[in-house]
Length: 322
Image (spheres, rainbow, N blue to C red):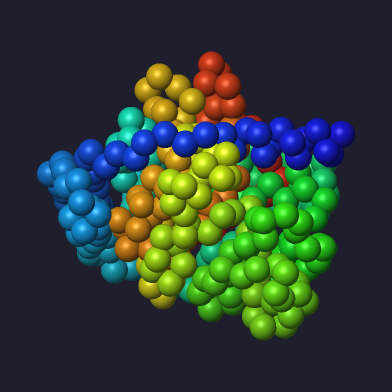
């Protein structure tokens, strides 16, 4: 049964690539409540130029403007449909269009590293234990949550969640890159064939995300169009997480498999993360698993077959704790 599920998850995300196009627009609207005064900021629609440099500048500027709006009232609790600021957590979600695809880009700034957590379905480790992303998020009072690496679909691969080592068998094949998240909130791409799970735990790693591939490492793109052909992947719903600088993250979920949203290739996903300034970024479980939940509401349009919009049950999530 596990072998069948593993094959399904891999087939679900990995097929042939399409051509890359550029981000079309970025729109940000943030409503901020400050004491007894309400301030509404509607930023103009941003059009991203075709070259990657212009794209990076425009996206970064748009996110910075939105972040400035939401953090303008220090100490105030601010919650809207696309923004949150409280307890040292600032989140702004923008909806963007790239390559005939709708993507939801959450910029997260934390004051404490332990606000970035993972959670297991039913709060239990195991191969056949699943819940939807929104169910796990609700059980853990998550402000923002995305699906994780679906560790339960595989028999091998490191599993470290919130500082607990659950599995230390090395993944086989070419895809042995993991994302390691350290206690200070920093990110690193590691290779399971080069370091043991126990060594990672001893060095301060509190989370391992074991899916891949790495999208960006040390500011450099790690996937290409030719690489995608060899990996037999195509445009699909996607989930990714990246870091810009200290406790400053970008989280992306892209819709796909529908007439309204085609889905992204790995290269397109990497370029989107790069345009927001990520120096390290990593691809998580995608396809029907790709889900973003914000303040208890599913933000995107999760689908496995393109016909029904519904969440898939998964093994785990990555989330921002309230």
